[in-house]
Image (cartoon, rainbow, N blue to C red; front, top):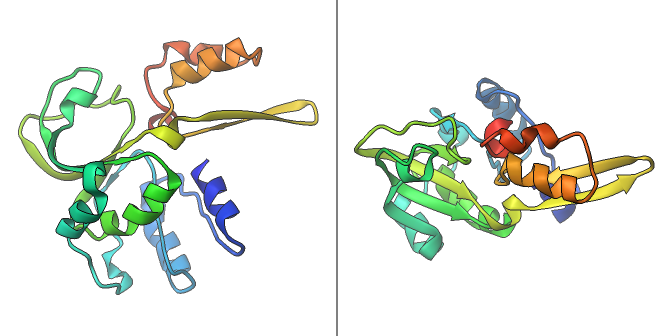
Length: 193
């Protein structure tokens, strides 16, 4: 859904998919020379930020100022997981739309904090204490499900923030079969990818 939104925004926009965070540095090196903006998304921990790109780094304070209520400091992270235990993150960013992502994405990348995108937290146990991490939570547009028919095939576009059980129930209610098995899987699409 995100790559599709980026493609619709402008001609000549290149999107790349990396199956593993290990592939990201090579893709960044390839696209950086031809790109104005590089945005990284996914349910993963980024241990290595693309700082070598030569752009001036913006501060965490600027992210907090620009983000307003979407960027909160010292927020519970463990409480957002299935087990509901664990510590806090230095900063929690809630993205509800691709425009939020376009506005805050570059500031998030240059904040100097390791990034962790939280799905439903069904496979995550957070240690106690505060973690010097920028947590990302996807809501709104990132929780949408759309279907369309292409010939005799039904194509389903799902946002990374949508829970698998919710999608399974919505699809079954619409008469679309084959995904019923996911009703018992507690994760989100972004976390399961």
